[in-house]
Length: 527
Image (tube, rainbow, N blue to C red; front, side, top):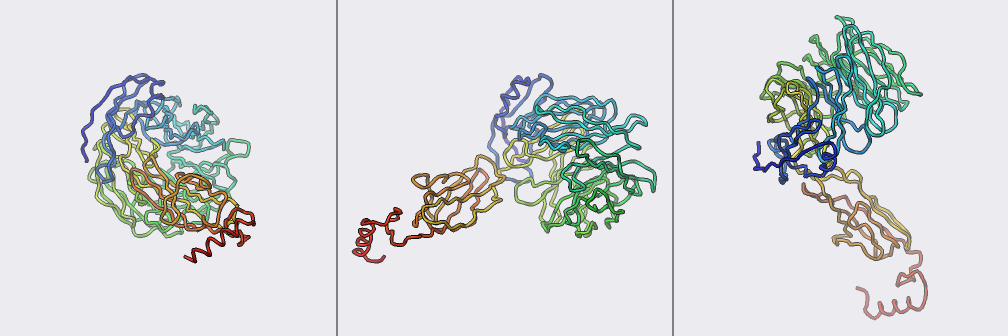
């Protein structure tokens, strides 16, 4: 791990202080605990460094009191303010803890939602289509099995929406549009004996709420499930992970909210938790699976594009007790990496991807308190992925800010255009990622442009030329720069059509001054 010398400073934090402090430099790291109104330790600002595996994550930026035995943790935006929030299931406290993101990697005081039952699983999604993320949770209390949904108010507070009794214990839940109606449906994984496992399909109603459950037979008890399009037909499918030593299974979606009988994936490994992503960039979804508990490895399987898998591989971490694994691009190179939690070893594991569905050596980051679940997201708005980790035995959520300097990328290139002289012309790009602040510099040929007569936006994502003159014709591009590096757009050609070639001075009027321009050009000769 890369070492840096940091000087800590102590500040007193209540809710109002957190809101005013969220502009603090996010590169500071240090142990911190935030209670209802407690001390927060932040490190003094430190310069970030280019990415190496041991410098991506260092010490926690802050730690937050959650509830008893926090487990599954997920990110969303409950108040639609552009800052990621999180919810964590407190399995020992029969509650959900919700904190709103304030920017800069900081969070508000916790809203604790008492469930009156043990939470099993949750999913965050915009269930009612209002642009704010909502929450669905499955719980168990003896033989009382329930699915509860919570709606986010404009201020981000979650309130009860619907309670749906379940016929069996639901161990996992996911959300997505299963029938193409634009509404978010729910899928639950249910317990059952051998040959008696089911998945529950809850289709969203037009007026809100959910229709009665439809069952999908899954043969064995499914511990987890993930919705994804495995055969690239534009319809969500289901992949299930199992407790009873069974390999993953895939139900291909029909597109109307129903699913075909399961197909075996071909995996020789029994996997319980499964992350889905395109690991080798071929446009087909692959998997990263794990069997939480005592193992120290993840299994990768490359998709065939029909729901089956091939070329299985094992990637081993140098710590046992792996509980959960997620994938994301940690160092901004366009290749997916793995982050895992190892509860017994009190570490978070990192493996950088190679781009061909394999991964390099592991690096471990200290995470005291029994790290159980992890979620990835840009918590401080700097364009790279950060971590939130639930630590069960210390009843905390820890935030790790990514220390990489990420170069920007250009998602939308400028497009060549042709206009008549006197009209307006515009080139635009869309840049993504990159450690801020980002700057823009437009060029015509090799000459940098500045704002002035006829030119606007020379240092912004959009360049305007108005009115366009014949002399403005040429090749344009923009360079986007940041602390992590620079990237140049592709070239775009501006063609300017002159409807009156005799207007030699380009003022839009054919008069004596054009004769003067002609005589001047004649006297100097063609050059």
